[in-house]
Amino acid sequence: MMTALSNQPKKSDYFVDTVCQTDAELLKTEEDRYYVLALLLKGSSIAYIDGKQQLLAGPAFICLDRGQTFVRWDQTPLDFYQISFDPLFLNRNLTEERIHSRQFEELCDRHDFFRLQPFLRHDFSSTYITGLSPELLNRSVRLFAFCREELYRSTDWYWSCRLRSNFMDLLHIVEQLYYHKSHAAVPSPVQDVQMKEGYEDVYSTLMHIWADYADPDLTAQELSRRAAADSRNLVRRFKLITGKTISAYILDYRLYAAQYKLRFTQLSVQEISNATGFQSAAYFCKIFKQRNGMTPNQFRSQVVSERIDAFG
Image 1 (tube, one colour):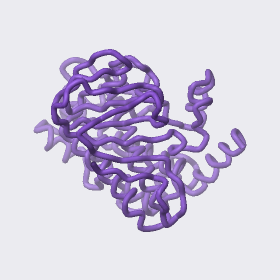
Image 2 (cartoon, one colour; image 1 turned 60 degrees about the vertical axis):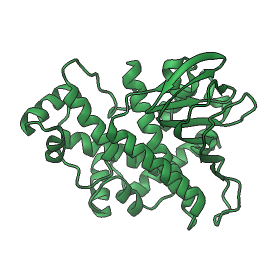
Image 3 (tube, one colour; image 1 turned 90 degrees about the horizontal axis):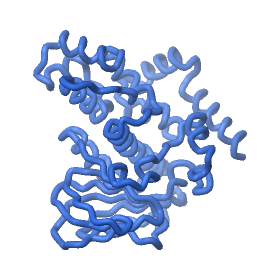
Image 4 (cartoon, one colour; image 1 turned 180 degrees about the vertical axis):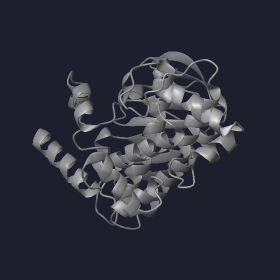
C-alpha cells in the first residue's frame, strides 16, 4: 500500500485534505468523509456500488462522493490509482451545503467551479466512466504520479498548488469523458463538441489534445501525423465538428487550462505558462491579454476579489 496523508506536517504548514494511494483493495464506506477518484488501469472485478452489483473493467474512472459505498465482491488482483479528496481542496467555498444547493449551477457558471457531476449523480453510467484512449490513459497515470509525488516531496511552499493543478487536469479529463458519454450540455466552450458517426479521427485528435496540450511541440501537423491523415482533410473535418481549426482549438484549450490554474492556485505566471504548453511566459501574457483584456495577474486578482465579495 502506498498512502500519503495530507495532514502530515508540510513545509508550507498548509492543510490539504487529500489522500493518494495504490492498493489491492478499493473500498469506500458510508463513514468515509472523502470523495474518491479512482483510475482502474487493468483487470476486472465485481463490486457492489450503493448495494447494486456492477461489473468493472479497466481502463476506467470510478467517481464516488461522500456516503456512497463501494465493496469488492471478489478478490481478483486490480491495478489502480486512487485519490480521496474533500472538494474544499479545490476551493474553500466548495462546501457540501453549496454543492447540494439549488444555486450550485449558477455558482459554477459565475466562478468556474468544477461541477463534479460524475461524483454527484449516483447512476452507474456517471460513476463508472470508460472510453480512455491510450493517450488519455497515459496522461492520467502521469497526473496521478505527479499528485502522489507532491504529497510526498513537498519541496517548497507551492507544493499544494502544484498538487491542485495536476488534480484539476485529472478532473478535466474525467469531465470531458463524462460529458461526451452522457451527451449532456457541456459547460465549457472548448468541451462543447457534438460528435457524429464517421468522425473517429476528429475525436481521436481531441483526445490527443486533452492529453498533450501541455506539450509546446503539439501542432496541427503533429496531430495529423499521429492520425496518419492528410493534414488539410483533418483540419477541414475538425473544423466542421468543433467550429475551430486545430491550432485555434489547441490555443483555446491552453488558455482554458491556464485560467483554471490562475483562479485556483498561486502558481507563478511562469510556472502556469510552462504547465500549459506556451513557448514562453511573455507569449502567454501577450495572448492572454489579447483574449481577456487584462494580464494573467490582473485576471487572478479580479476573480479572487469576486469570490471574496460573493462568499466573504
